[in-house]
Image (cartoon, rainbow, N blue to C red; front, side):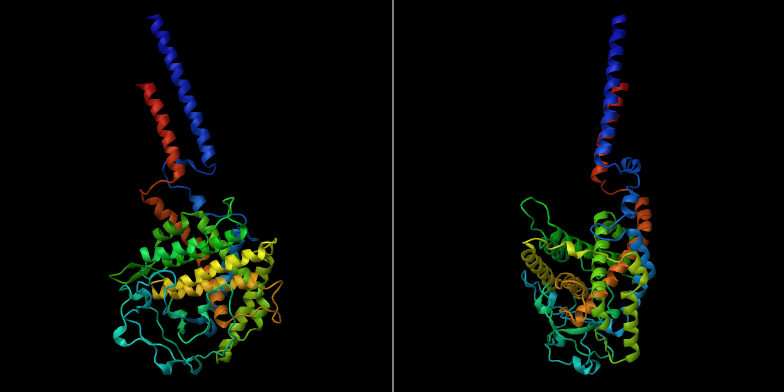
Length: 467
């Protein structure tokens, strides 16, 4: 009896040591996986609220912090940009919506027009717009994916532009220079929103865009310049996703539109890197606009309406020379640190070629309205790259920097899109997190899954002890 009792005590002592070892392993694993991971995440509750919804400190590779960006955007940038893009000069964008995809066999989607879209009568165009163009016959018009929300409204008014010089942009597709196949579109009548364009066709576009930024050096690490390009594309992708989620067709039967919190969470908020890249892209484009301030201030904004043109110039000056912005974030992004060393010029040409291919990929987008906003925003990003990396030093009006009118329109509209995305992320994140947190289900994150397996092992040892 005594021997049996001692054996039981030794067995109990051994089990306790094993349990303690398991508990130590759990603590080590928790620290090794992520010191920021909360116990709520570990136990399967609402995962990582602060990690997903709250960003603090400096925006990576930029010269401004998240809190300052949010304040400046809400108080200064967003209100000014929202008003600026409604002015006649920034309202119209010239674009070629009929196209051939240069990268794969055309599936026909690029040539289809929504059956609700028609060409504007010639009398509706200003005299300077009237150029010969290839027009499909009425019987050739077809619905595009059966989605009326994907159609571009081509209604124009009598506003007229004075011409700007046509200058090639080394960062964008050469086919985007002015030609008879391009037409003006009123952006205010064609907001960036959900269009129903999903599935393999849309995924193929983004896969091709990201593949253009895939080459890495022998070390396996992406160089700083390629990292910048990747972050710009990722930030633009996040911004587009935010606008789709913010203006979504919730009920097709009743034509009910609104905010889709599940979508913004699934596509953007659950990936902190995407939110960080959105802020980075916003500050990058903002830096381009402020660097070209002298040029933009003195450029010609003549639409034929003197009062509207004065308003445009006034709003633009308020944006370019805002004292709050200059005091709080004088240098949003420092481009001087790039393209250093002997390989700088060669690397710049390589990345220019990559971005031109990304620009050309917009011709492969199968949704007309998506193609419109894709072309505009990629041209805006190419214009930012042109401003920051094609001219040395500060840009004064008498220096080599030259911009097309369409580039300026695209640049300011892109900045407005990014500004609105930053604002929407800041506003929608708490609600999206709350809604998603109330819904059970969905695959756990890798960290949570790992911790659960460890916890199951501890429970196994506990059960062995009690059995």
